[in-house]
Length: 235
Image 1 (tube, rainbow, N blue to C red):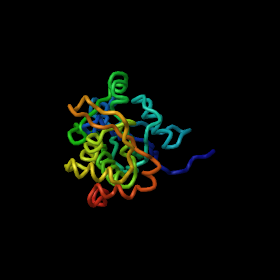
Image 2 (image 1 turned 90 degrees about the horizontal axis):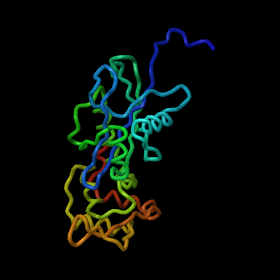
Image 3 (image 1 turned 135 degrees about the horizontal axis):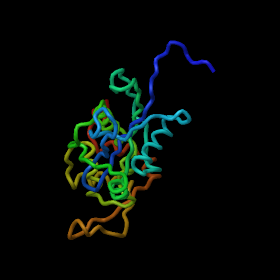
Image 4 (image 1 turned 60 degrees about the vertical axis):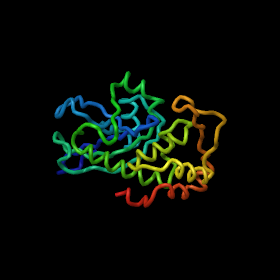
C-alpha cells in the first residue's frame, strides 16, 4: 500500500495522570524520565501508541506496564498537540486520568515500579506540558465530582465521613464545616451505614459507610449541593 505523499511524520503518544487518595490527602503518581532529554526529571506515565491498538488500549497498557495497575477508573481527558511540545520529535499526546485508592496499591507501586506519590499541590516540576495536563485533569475531576460518583473510585469500599469530607476538601481545595457536611451528605440518603467503626483515628471511633450506587444514580444531582458553584471549577 502506498503512503500518503508529502506528509510529515507525527508520533502518537498517551500520558496518564494518576490521582490517588490515602485517606487524608489527594496525591499524584509520578516517575523519573529514563530518556533524554530531561533524563531523571519527573514525568507522568507515558508511552507511544502501538500500530495495532487504539488510544484507550495504549493508555491501559502504559498504566499497567509502568505501575502494575489494571481495571481502574481511566477516562480520556484531552489531546495535547502543540508542535513544539516534545523537543525530540513531533508528537501528539492523548491524556487520560486514573483514580485509585492509594492504600490498596501503595506498596506494589512504590516497591515494584519505583513510582512516587506527591501531594497534588506540592509536586516537583514536570517535563514538557505535563503540568498543563495535570491542571486540566484537576479541573475535570472537580467538575465531574459535583455530578457523578467518581470520587468514590478514590475511596476504599468502606469509609468514614471524615475521610469523605477530607477527600472533598482536597479535590476542591476548600474547608468544610464538619456538622454541615455530615448533615448534608446523610440527608441525601445515598450512603449506607455499616455496623462497624474505625477506632484507629479517634477515641470514640467513626462509623463506616458505603455508597449505595443505585440511590446515587437516581439522585446524583443532589451531590452538586455539597459544592457551591461547581461550574467555576471547570475550564
